[in-house]
Image (cartoon, rainbow, N blue to C red; front, side, top):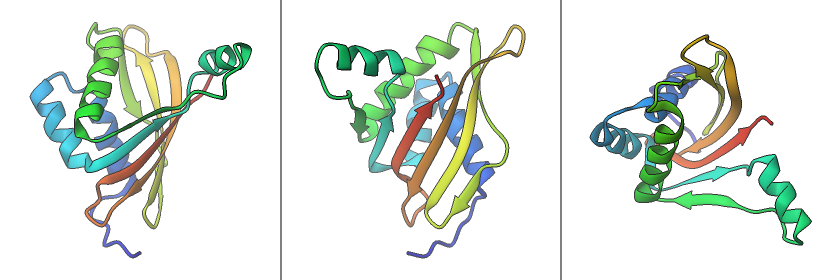
Length: 143
């Protein structure tokens, strides 16, 4: 598959992170529809606590997966409400995003608005379609 890339990996990472910081539900909805394909998937590595709890009670590792614009809108809304809306944190893209064909890899941080300290760090690997929209979005959060 060949891609005529119209956006750099870093610009893509900035757009992606911008969705999670967006206050307006209407603007978020538009950004999600521009960034993810209609059946785009978001797969989050479960937090270590969740994985350990599942193992303790005899279950395989839980899966945190969703698909499609309505599910993505609900996910981004919840993350916004939990972390950004109160003004305590903001997400920012890390430097050095990279692209290899239809895969884009970038880091991000959740940063305290009061002192700039980093509260969480993550890695995303996304696979885009021929229209530069996300088909698969894999998120890893550092413990």
